[in-house]
Amino acid sequence: MKPIFKTILAGIALAGSSLAGAQAQTLLNASYDVAREFYKDYNAAFVAHYKRTTGKDVKIDQAHGGSSAQARAVADGLDADVVTMNTSTDIEFLADRGVVAKDWTKRFPDNAAPTTSTMLFLVRNGNPKGIKDWDDLARPGVQVVVINPKTGGNGRYTYLAALGYMKKKGATDAQAQEFLAKMYKNVQVLARGGRDATTAFLQRNTGDVLVTFESEVVSINKEFGEGKVDVVYPSISIVAENPVAVVERTVAKKGTAQLAKDYLQYLYSDEGQEIAAKHSIRPRSAAVLKKYAGTFKPIKLFTVQELFGSLSEAQKVYFNDGGQFDKIYTVK
Image (cartoon, rainbow, N blue to C red):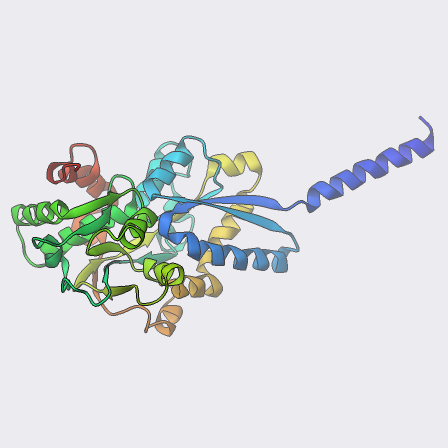
């Protein structure tokens, strides 16, 4: 081969190599329903941060649905690089299948939960049914919209928040079960995920009250306009942690392990925490939480660990097939 051809071929190879290196890496975040607006803003901030600090471009794709449904999709082969869920049981489900690291809670601060939320009520403008607390959801004539605890963490936290409320009031197990049976008898829509529930409540005008995450208020105001709903904070509610993890199976295949780690770590940054607060997702940062004190109303909160041991234990008792939820709820 003549030297000139060698030079041309080498130049083509080098150009191809440079082009490949210049192509942006793509990362897929599989997340829960009501976090889509938060991650839309967070992703833009991370892309800019990553370019600023590394000089590299990155593209972030989002996949949203009921938290448990998303976990099953990842287990079944959805090539998400990271999972950002609203309940630890969905990530434990993936860890048990070797998709996520067994010690995933130790890979990031705060048990790998950079933010939290809580459950509250959204009611029709003017609160015509006078709904103030969990007791009201069991009243005759009150129509309730909630998420199915078998398909979404939102639904599991709703059930545990209502049960915890009764426990905090000193109810016996039998009294608590009776209350929950009445409350779920009033359920008009048992939605697959948070967005399905919101659609039923606002677009189909179903129900008197929607039980959902605090963060959904911001999304509703943006999508449907201010003043469509009133927000009711119950006297007692639950701390809902939003855990995150790297999907080891995917990053090993795609070579995105460091990018995935950087993406999740940035959730703990001041900017990440600020964006969360702006979407009414409670930041872990005490300084940011204090700054947004007007957003996060004072409310008595209890943890899952305090009353139920862990979400895994609660899952077995209440939400697995044949558990307490199945005993009180009959599909309409």
